[in-house]
Length: 573
Image 1 (cartoon, rainbow, N blue to C red):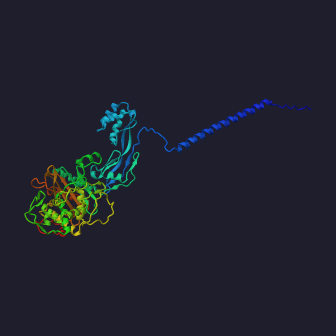
Image 2: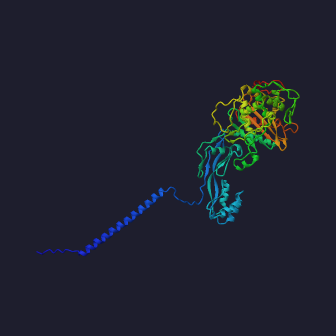
């Protein structure tokens, strides 16, 4: 039987001690590393807390180009929803001067494509290599952008922006207004959109989500009005013209034209004084159409009746001057005939009979002595006489000595014709709740005024007989006011005007036509009075716009007698 042999390996004591020391060193290094990492985290955390607690961190950013900001605007439409103004996306051209390799070539090529470019300013901008962004042209057309692209100039690029577009061109331009290169409103309704908070700053081409702004204008009426006024300017050799169609009950402006027109796409037009809006931005002595107010005042105060006679054969002394009639009748005239023959003496006598205080109070009640405002902006304030004595009372009575904006005058006279209720002009459709307004004259006075205005068109001796249009029962008053100049009034330079309304039995619309410095008229001779140019112009306008406005003709026999009383109700039927 063999014996088992067991061999036991014995590790020396020195080797075990070395192993223990190596493990200890590893543990210490690990703890040291962990401590360093923790210290770093604590330092970073402390720095973050310190930065977060600072009130104003000093942070600087370097941008390669400025932030471009445009304005998103709601559409503008007429009362029937037809588009007048909208935003469209267009390309705008910019450059990085540092990347433009040949400055002279770039300027020369761009100038050949983009007309009106300021080459000197462009050269200075592109020569400054410290800039990384320079606008060259904003709001290019697609064709212009394509031509620039085909030039192949390094350093140029395009950015899409919003730009205002006006599909109707210059039609209604004075009311719509204009915007600047950043799509910010400058004038008219466009400026009102900004002032009422209806525009929004945007980056890029995001269109406005707001509903369209609906104006009271009717594009059909506006077009006819503009076309007939242009025809009148050419036919009567006038220097300018203006026309208005006003809803006599609501105060809504249905049509408003001033020639020469202003194009909304050309903001520089608003700096051209020859293109100012003559309806609201100019004040004028309007002449004999002002007699409508004088007669209404006389009837309302009870100082006169339509049949009361006044001896107009002698002139009225007013300061160093004597007021006389340009076409004296050589006999006393009734109030009805004073209006019919447009007697300056008769109107002056009616004004004197009322007196300066009562005259001023009546004009104030009509809103003719205070500044006026519409949604398209302020209306030029009236120019009042420094003193209001006898001479001023007489001259104001027949339309001189007081200058007022035509729009303000039309709004005042509409109240005299609609039954006596004051209205407020507006260029917005259906925006105002219909509430009872101040009564300025009685319904009886309003009816009498409508009677004599219709008579002025139907009577053979009426100054407005050329305004007659079969079936539409037009009434009105002519006015021929000499324009002031150096040394006094200019006899051959006049404002020829016609204040009209239709249908006269219950007026729905008031019209006002003004021709500035006409040099001819219809009929024999070289007469420039309103009866031979402004009156027939009104007839052509009404004939075109009445069907558009839904006013149907009533074909009856027109009375053109040579005298006698006039029955307004019978004549209007």
